[in-house]
Image 1 (cartoon, rainbow, N blue to C red):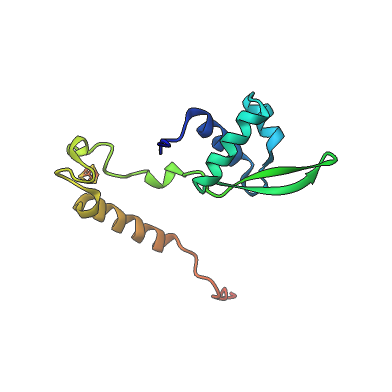
Image 2 (image 1 turned 90 degrees about the horizontal axis):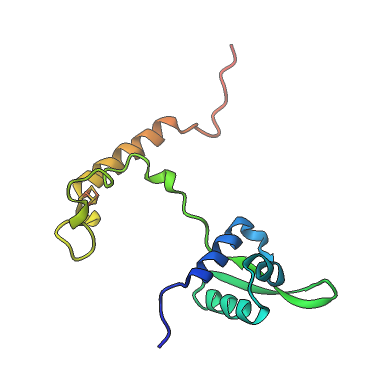
Length: 134
Ligand code: SF4
């Protein structure tokens, strides 16, 4: 049975690919950066593709056909969580799916999201509004 967990090497490969965003990397460049053989590298790429995390695009480069590995996911920006009540919450250790507390019905999260939403509305610049000339 295939493990659903991503291996350390697969994670490292994906992190490297994420640095190159939509441009991706030729697979041989990734193998070199990871320090793995082309055989092991190909296995990693195929696994990542099967998980829907990358796509392998056929490309003619350096006088031969190869694959460009392009990430299909974006890095997670943790700054969006700035100000979240969870890190300092007294219920944090008992919060999650099938636990006593859950983010899906948490008033603290709801209040935080509402206040974030209001803050963004206030700082939003209206578009298609002409500036008044003095
Ligand atoms: S979701 Fe609510 S209860 Fe859970 S840790 Fe965050 S603030 Fe606490």
